[in-house]
Length: 105
Image 1 (tube, rainbow, N blue to C red):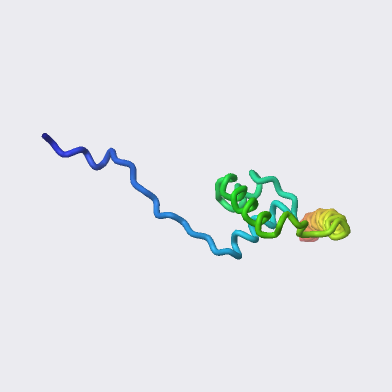
Image 2 (cartoon, rainbow, N blue to C red; image 1 turned 60 degrees about the horizontal axis):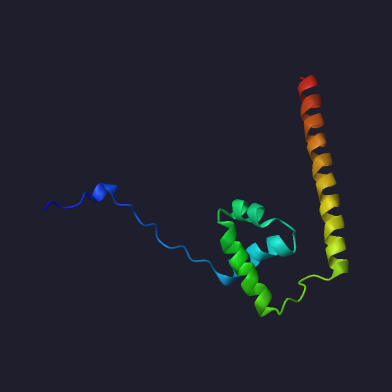
């Protein structure tokens, strides 16, 4: 009998552990910032099922209480829209500045 070829055996990755704060922040992306599970998972380099499990545990711990009130959610939505507009205006001004700097040379 010969030994099995070790190079063909899959190598196990070390199991990653996450702090409670990291888990809360990941769940916050989904609940508070209204990311989809897939978007949050992609941005954090995780699988969406992992965040789904954390969310379910978080909701069970908080007895399904809303993390933000409806007024807070509306304000958050308004502020996000304002932030998006400001970033767009900033980007336009950056491009205009670069254009005029190039023209003046």
